[in-house]
Amino acid sequence: MRVVVVGLGYVGSVCSACLASRGHHVVGVDTSDWKVGHIRDGKSPIVEAGLADLIAESKAAGRLTATTRIAEAMPGADVVLVCVGTPSAPDGGLDLAHVKRATAEVGAAIAGSGRFTTVTMRSTMLPGSVEGELQPVLERAAGGRAGEAFGLAYNPEFLREGSAVADFFGAGYTVIGAGDEKSAAALRAMYEGVGGEMLVTAIRTAEMLKYVNNAYHALKVSFANEVGRWAKREGIDSHQVMALFCRDTKLNLGPSYLKPGFAFGGSCLPKDLRAMNQRARRHDLVLPVIASILESNDRHVDEAVHLIERLKKKSVGVLGLSFKAETDDLRDVLAGASRCALAEKLQHPHPLAQVGANAKHQRRVFACEPLEHLEWRARVGPGLGVADRDLAAIGEAGFGGGGGLPVDDRDFVAELVEVIRGGNAEQAGAEDDCTQGGTLCKGCRSPCPCYLRDSDAARAAALLLRCVTPGITAR
Image 1 (cartoon, rainbow, N blue to C red):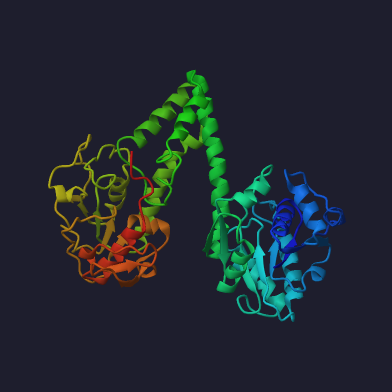
Image 2 (image 1 turned 90 degrees about the horizontal axis):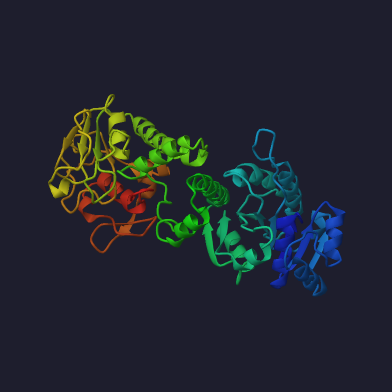
């Protein structure tokens, strides 16, 4: 393939050399004569392990060259990788001016070429930047629409300085945010044999993924450093603590707790965080990340309240009282256990019917504090008090056991995880029949709980419940 790489900074230089080493014909473009000259001479414009050898080999093989003019590089291009910098604006946002200028030049070169070229953004940019700000620039310059006159995609890079070449070839996955199938196919062909698993998604999702990755990496560093400062005051070896922490690849270093859902509760997490914060104050320690966790959790409950209130229903039934499924634990209610806190905050403007998650066990819940302060009506038995509500907020997946819920065809179903996720019943939808007589979800392709398939509203709830798992559901 003929690949044009616009921008020969850190990302552009590495991508150019690595792709050329895989047999692609690569033309690098940069406004810097110095960088272009280095590439033409077979030298690396940056210091990076293994890069100089790749550039020298590819230059000698005639697969890598460079120019200062985009128009000169574009004839015959199958893919364009835009790796131009996106510096911070004065207000902290992104300055896309350089990217827009480069994009306009690429679009002008595409105009009238008669060749379908996939324009791919690799620069880090906020969700909506490609389709909202750069696509219009390209379409004006190219005189055609994305997906028809040219392809449009976003391909986030996950290269670390010092190991960028190894990261390029040994990445866990390569993410392609594609606006059309032809663009996705072009990038699949370009990356064939490198970059681990190839995942195709929406452009906005790929844009956001880069920020989520970087934010999480920064969070891990900050969290570990706060643990280190606390451990030092306690006279404990923080490296030993974190080494043991990292041995748990099921809960600590795995996918557990990392799916957006409802707030955490229970008897352990809130209590232990309060104790950690109190101990830090005794040591005169400021641990901003750890100290902010409970406040973040409270805000999550408030957001669920606001989202439910926007539905403008006068009466609400909350299914699920304990802090997670298959438990009757209601401890820490006064401190804001998630679903109890939600119901308590909703109770004043809304008549509530609360159905406990332990309903199928037909026994009392386990709580340290009395529940008399809560004004809602707690009932035992699946579905009691729900069918006559305008809105049912379902606390956890699989509620109701096999007994079914007494619902009708009114559009009254919401789900505490899904309102935070941003989806809705109509978006989830049913695709086709499952083997048990229910429906399959478009998102997870799992059969819906068939005991809920007797009404449209119940089916929508079932689909939402199967698609999403609460973010923190264990101690």
